[in-house]
Structure formats: C-alpha cells, structure tokens
Length: 167
Ligand code: SF4
Image (cartoon, rainbow, N blue to C red; front, side, top):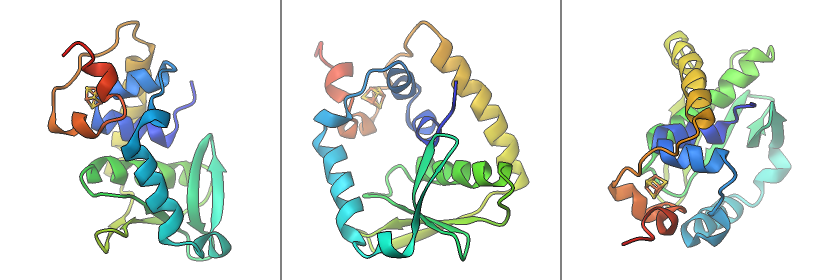
C-alpha cells in the first residue's frame, strides 16, 4: 500500500477517519466544510499557480512548491488541526528527502486568520514518521473499523453523518 500525506493527516486527526478513507468510503463530496476549505484554497492566492509548481511525489500531491527556494506552501482554512497539518507537510518534506531533494522547508498558511507557521523536518521527526507509516499500514489493513472518537472535531468532519447516523 502506498502511504500518501492524506493518510498521515488523518492518522493524526482520527484513526477511524483514516480507516474509512483508506477502505474506499469517501464522504468529502457531501461536506460543506470540505467545499469551503477548497474554496479558500482556490481563491486565496489566485496568482500562485504561476509562481509555484504542483508536484506529485509517490502519490502525494503538493499544490504549491517553490522549487527555487525549496519551500512547500500548504494552505488551510483553519488552524484547529494544526498538528495534523504540520505532520502532513513534514511527510511531504520526508518524501522529497527520500528522493534526494534535501533542505526543503514548509510554510502552513491560514489566509482567513492571516497567520503562517513554519515547518521543518528533524531527525526525530523522521523516526516518528517511520513508526507512523508502520502504524498506518496496521490500522488500514485491520478488518475492523476503529471506534468513533466522540470528540468536538467530529462536528466538522465529512464523516459526521456516517459515524453518528444512529443518533
Ligand atoms: S466523525 Fe469523528 S469519529 Fe467519525 S471519522 Fe470523523 S473524527 Fe472520526
């Protein structure tokens, strides 16, 4: 199985979300929140596509890569899941490193909040990612879907209806 950055993001957010996504259950097309996020992405920096490259690496898609300065720009709607966003970008940096592109850094951008966060990959992060990839494969290959997490973030999740349909 090819692990992509979305797996890493979902692993940080919710193991059930990771399992559902990886087992072909996709609700993103029905989610207004996801649609809003995409809109922020598409309208916040309209001139970006001319300056930066879209890069596909080992199945993961980096929307805005500044090849000259070796910077990944990742645009997000809100910083509520910042840890997940950070690890997503660290994973991109790791993929590039594994493909002989060294010295890459990342910037998380929250245009609605007028806020940015720098992201770097340390040796400790690489060790964490190596473990994470093993755990992701284990979760995804399990025949049983993990229990729902009953957390605040569920209300903003595209799987909310799916997980709480019996309530
Ligand atoms: S609604 Fe909650 S439990 Fe269900 S996938 Fe989303 S975050 Fe996980």
